[in-house]
Image (tube, rainbow, N blue to C red):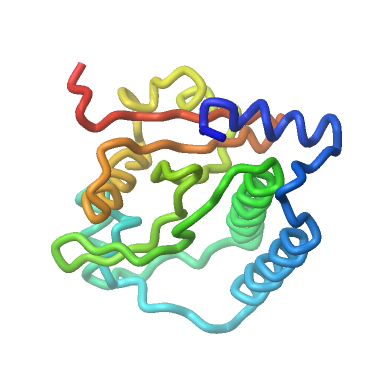
Length: 197
């Protein structure tokens, strides 16, 4: 299997409910349930991490944002509806990885530690060997992944973040699996770092 059939294979699984023979669906469902438990524990825990540490997930953010991050500027308290939005995003990302596996594709290197110039981060993983990131998006942002215009309009620094993981791993090709969280549409966008056009 390759990533060129990924979206069709996920849609096919949802349409036919037929899991490939080599897929242990009971194990994947159990694994997905464990992931949901971790998300809920993390979201409802009182534990707070020190956010003043530069991480690869911050690469691509504005200099102003990074300055405030590193200097410990008191951040606004995150509103409950915003916390729900983040929780929903994490759930969608886990669900997508579950569907990738359930449709017969391989997911490896999940949350693998990466490091560039002493800055550490954890990548989402690889699908069928391709270094990738999973994104849940608004319908507006989804268009950038669908039509490839993310390359020209990347307000959130998604490309620079994935480039950092690629540098750590020695990869030249990166990709995103994105879902329009309002409509359920999926897309797969690949980007070749050696393509200067």
